[in-house]
Image (tube, rainbow, N blue to C red; front, side, top):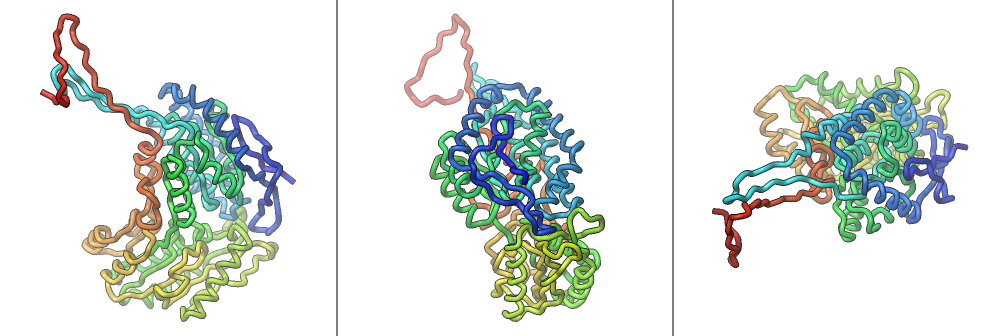
Length: 497
């Protein structure tokens, strides 16, 4: 049985003797054990990262950029191997895993423009003989705590920016699919990143708490559920750290009667059931407005039944298993509860068995109609392949419904009307909006983050916000008087003249 170790100071490290099983979701069998770190392992990583920071933070922009260019190429060269590692532990299809690697690699490409990103500004002659300029410097040792659903992409939204700006990084990935983190650590080493700059500590709550409270860690980035995001934010800020804490979601797609229903249904189906719905940007609710409802449900039903469910590494598979047996049971119980609360089950994914993989954590796509905002299927973040249909009379009703939801991560509107689109994007209280785009994840040079309970605190992730998060500014006011120049110091507060 393979044991997945930590990666500390440029090498695999066994650390704690405690371990936890890692499963293959398609077969339901244990395929490895991952070590579970605690305070001692976190401290070892912090010590290695702190020592590496002394030299890495003084490295040139050229050196850091060269590492990022090399790392980007290695991600491209080894995309297939990394995708298969992700699929084997998460369950998503190989193609879906390739997609998350690509979206993560875009952030690396963003950092390859480091020389421009970190340029400061200069103001000449702000007062007589006085100039002002500013620049940004790294924080020190920083950490990332990331979820199971994107074992490559979400960490890649954090550590390339942190490392490129001169910090050293400790990653605590999900213990459910930990191998991608170690593989990426090895790619960094091959790219020429010095030992100790990137470290991986596996584990559960003990490792998380150690990261949140360790005095040697300056900042923490987190993506996960809203309750844990609140805990991370409260605990880490109480210990003097900067915090990015992205929480849960309940993303709505709105379909107007003037929309192309086949186009909308195609994209909603992909957005709802892709990666078995285990995405923080998954479309879990569709609001059918007015006369769009009946025809839309008919098309969505047909599309859901056409989805091929199977192992992620089987060609032609559209949707793989859920990540754990507990997740499978939770989703199927949610469908049962929805029916009991009055929803109409249009497509029932419960009890699906995949031939040759009968013990896998599979469930099929489920489509629920006539859902109301009082039902659990609407109120809870299910994080699985369940799409709920809510019907409203008008676009304004749909906007009011979405704005009343506590989450504010992403939303989409399907329409042919520019006026409706403009009204929607201005009135909706959501951080990321798609117009005829089902999963509006911004490009790497914009920042990712929702509103309301989807973002605890005020710091989104990657892009310009990522640069600001992992650095702090210095402003320098300079005077170079001539040797013969006589100046008079004033006791009043200094002013410009």
